[in-house]
Image 1 (tube, rainbow, N blue to C red):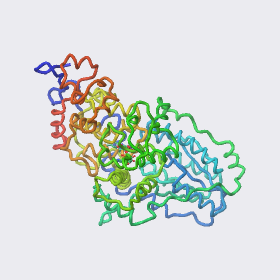
Image 2 (image 1 turned 180 degrees about the horizontal axis):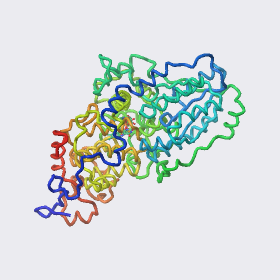
Image 3 (image 1 turned 120 degrees about the vertical axis):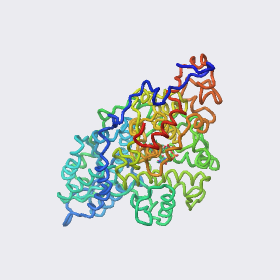
Image 4 (image 1 turned 135 degrees about the vertical axis):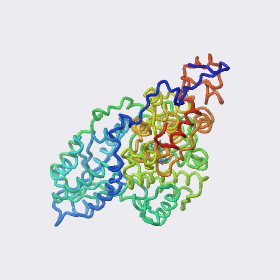
Length: 590
Ligand SMILES: Cc1cc2nc3c(=O)[nH]c(=O)nc-3n(C[C@H](O)[C@H](O)[C@H](O)COP(=O)(O)OP(=O)(O)OC[C@H]3O[C@@H](n4cnc5c(N)ncnc54)[C@H](O)[C@@H]3O)c2cc1C
């Protein structure tokens, strides 16, 4: 470790071009994500004929003649893992009721898709846990659940249709998933099903307002959030059907065929884990993030009605640990306007794992917010009221899903702003590893990354600070960071994660301007004024207080600093900032 002139401060590793000892220069895409980056022309072609528009057109086709069969299938996927307020499930039930048919549910595991989408073992384990809980609920409704693991992933549409035929299904209903591969898979399944006279219904459910419904005056998708939000609010308030709860599904009334009866009594197994996605810390994850619809409802209830609790900061305390106190006036949502950027407080809802897996619907969240103190109006410009502010955050989830649906190339490794595609990235493997391990020497970044590694989740501010440091300070390719987050999070959601990374990397829709670069020390003081967050996740610094905590190398004598066993900064922020400005200003240049 180096010391500076006054012998006090271990100097951060230099990032200026002529001093970079450990940095391997490279203009090429990093090998880890190379396969995932489409060419500009291929990506533009996908944008021009988006998989969503292709699927929507295909949905107009119906099998000729009367549908003959014995059941209707609800095809549940990993983003709609609930029975309440689930549109495809309700639709399947109503078609079954009308046709005097029985209802069954199918869940197909697709390890190839999980791999392709960098799904984390935590997310897969959460999926399995929720599925087990749903199986019990389905069984109480006499609805059989069929499960199977399908490989290779490209065979899934054909295997689904084989299964539909085996069970003599007339219709299959599913909620749309907006990722490119998934939309293409569904379109293929639809074509194959049609050939066999089976009807497919893929419907919008994930967002509060469906993609394609919030458009500019020129009928174009929005690329800027504020006008999107204003229009989104007018759609929500102008059409009462938007927030309507899907009809609850009742017990199967028709007597089941022997095959379905057998499936109800002898369900196909839900594995302990999916090979390749063994979750090493599953007990801990189950403590932090218990599964089930009732849990999700309780997480929401507490956010709306109870006060912040200190214990929720981390330290093995789950999202439903006891100690909550009802206090509508000072509930977490009421304090959200002021507190939402505080990583050291129990300031946000922690609903993201439940929303990402669809364990609770976003509509339900908004209905409950509107019911609070009889609130009826949403206001785009109100940035003080906690409930309004929170709704605006939930709208970001819709925004990024709409962006993904309208500009699918963003998920094909392309920056939304193509002009930044040639920005030169570093490829320093040691820096990448230090970031992942939370050993960058910047306490707030390290606390964020250690929270990620410990909980599979991070506070929004922490995600922004860590991602900014990754891109602008380490100058590492944002796609590598995007991938690591997906592989680590229990709430990994392609649209929100990609949106968050592209916002931070200044390459996305409505991004952070490239010249606004977070300072990892001043951001620490803002996000963690009490210091509790850093002390919780970075035990080497647990005895430090005040400004020393945010930049110990700067304020402590060298010998004292060394005793902490905490790394010195791996880059100098000032130099790194200049490098980032230089490279963003002139993409392609050193
Ligand atoms: C680099 C980066 C990566 C991210 N990756 C993900 C991800 O993989 N999955 C994910 O769900 N969110 C992601 N986010 C968004 C946001 O950080 C999380 O949704 C939020 O921190 C979850 O905590 P919460 O449920 O307590 O949020 P709250 O503040 O209580 O917000 C409520 C809900 O609104 C939605 N939401 C809030 N902020 C955003 C946002 N900026 N973008 C999209 N949706 C939002 C989420 O569904 C969230 O659960 C990312 C943000 C960044 C900057």
